[in-house]
Amino acid sequence: MRKILPHWKGFEKIVATPEEARARFAGNPYKLELIEGIIKNGEEITFYKSGDFVDLCRGGHAEPKDMQPDASSWPA
Image (cartoon, rainbow, N blue to C red; front, side, top):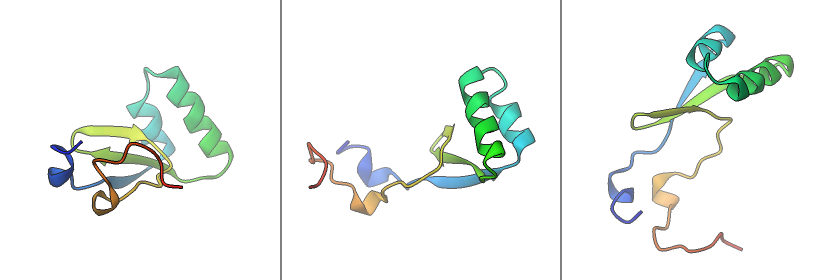
């Protein structure tokens, strides 16, 4: 974590259409089930990207400046 954190820029939010989400996760039945639930609930479909990693996610991430590389537990 100490090596990654100084260079990490955080997460990029990507809003997707149902079609885009289904296409991205066409081979993943679990993600497709989640996507259908999101659509049914009328929620926004979002991916988050960090570097080359992209995943279906609702968000709520800590900013890199708030991360503590030496923290060994959650704050109280």
